[in-house]
Amino acid sequence: MPKRQDLSVKDKFEILQNYDKLLKCSQREAAIKLGISQTALFHILKQRQTISDEVKKNGNLSRKRKSEGKLEEIATTLLRFKNVRERKIPISRAILFQKAQDFAICLEILTLSNRWMVN
Picture 1 (cartoon, rainbow, N blue to C red):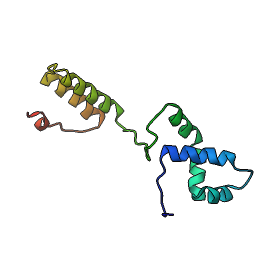
Picture 2 (cartoon, rainbow, N blue to C red):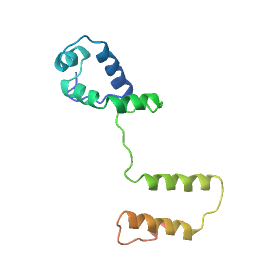
Picture 3 (cartoon, rainbow, N blue to C red):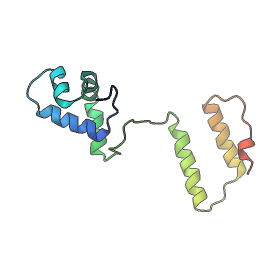
Picture 4 (cartoon, one colour):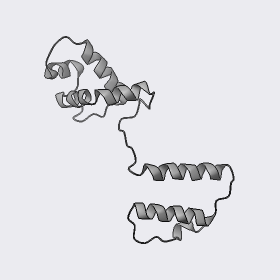
């Protein structure tokens, strides 16, 4: 087995189900039976609720790592602008520049160039 192994949400959920089926035994013994390290089993058990919630809400089960953007507001705003552009609705430069300034303040960027607005 590789030294480090990234498990998908589906794999982690299956490990949880198999762990629940095991008879009373220590985490070390359970980890050996499940074919993972004791540390990995500990972390999976610690995240039991999060993993179960992800499976229940039909999230991406093949995902190995969850990466939520720290700047979720920026991502949603960019998606909104993208959807508007796909519908061929014109967006003025003033609106784009105002949003860029708002994000620059949020990200604590001192200077905001308008090079990105060319074309």
